[in-house]
Length: 331
Image (cartoon, rainbow, N blue to C red):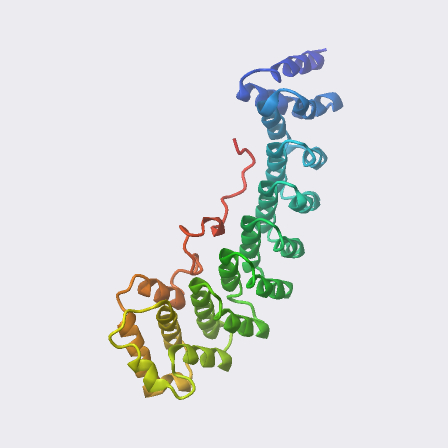
């Protein structure tokens, strides 16, 4: 009798105009171990508007996955979005497949939330779904997938990230360059050298930065040195012309890339870099470029003093920043 009265009281409170009252009522019904009571929050999704939706979904954050999975098929985008975040909070293996299924949602916000959830788990089973997301129609979703794969060690990620260097969006290409930073695969160097011909200067400088870092902590590769020497004009016997061509001129975009290559070569131990003529050219390039707006940033990125930024500007590319801890209540 008391149980029935409590349920009746909570059912009425689900109709309240106050969000906090409905939240408390929905949670109270879930806590009652009764089929009718536990199903009530889901039933409220059919009426009561957005507030009722939010209250009902919030009540399910600590309940069975089956109910959350049911909400992933709801017609309301906000409900599906909250259901993904709730599944992400549970950290259980049973919630893994529903999150993967959410990667195919019609709304990009839900897909992005699912990518966030997979990235936060660190499970190797997340690699294959994240790779598939690299073909998503929305830039923000592809970009988050690239950054999620950047911290992985699985070999399967390398080729898809190399393919992402040809993405239509420059932000994705730039993220893909830095995502290959520590990949121990011989194909990476060739891909980075090819990226030096990208139409976007930031992608090119990113490729130079990553090549220099790889030389420091992955392994020495003669192809890297050859490519960087060619960039500064120390290849094919044009060493002296390379230095003379700088004098009396304002640095152009090509010279900005040469500056990046010069800074990179200073971090590489190779007999060809130690040649006195090469060293003179490196210093000439740095002197010519010193004091320009980006000279400090480029040299610091190559030396690896700001690894969290991975050579990218947070202001110009905010969606590449790591997401906050997944919280269920978005309201």
